[in-house]
Length: 127
Image (tube, rainbow, N blue to C red; front, top):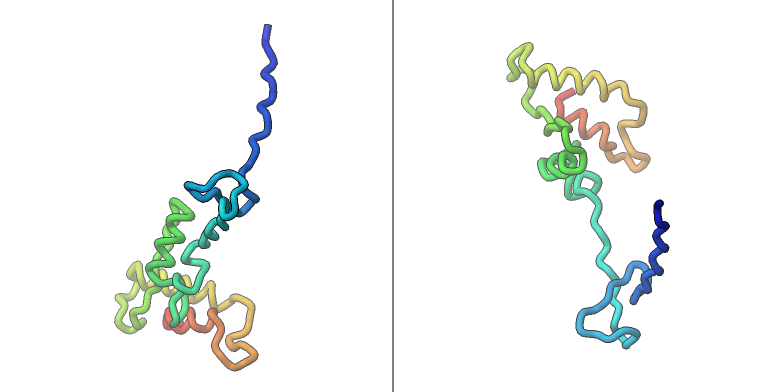
C-alpha cells in the first residue's frame, strides 16, 4: 500500500525576484534585500570574445568550448595561402571556411560604409 506524500508548503521568499537577502539584516528591515548581480553571457557572444579584425579571439573560442562541450572550434588560419603547405590541415581548413563563408548571404558593408563581421572574417582568413 503506497502512501501519498503531502505537498510541501510553499517556501516564503524573503526578497523579490531578482533580489537577494543581505546578510546581517532582519526580515522586512530597510536594506534587507539587494539587487542580485546580473549574470554575464558567454564571452563569445560579447565584444570581449570577438576579434577587432573579425572572428573570435582565443578568449571567445575558450568560452564557446566551455558552453558547448565536445566542440572542436579553433581560431582562424591567418597564415597567407602562399606560406601554407599545399594539402596541409590548415590549408584545407582555410579553403573549406572560405568556400562556406563566401556563399553566405548578406552585405559586405554596413549602410554607414564600415565592413560587416562577414567581410572582416573573410579578410582575416585571406579569402
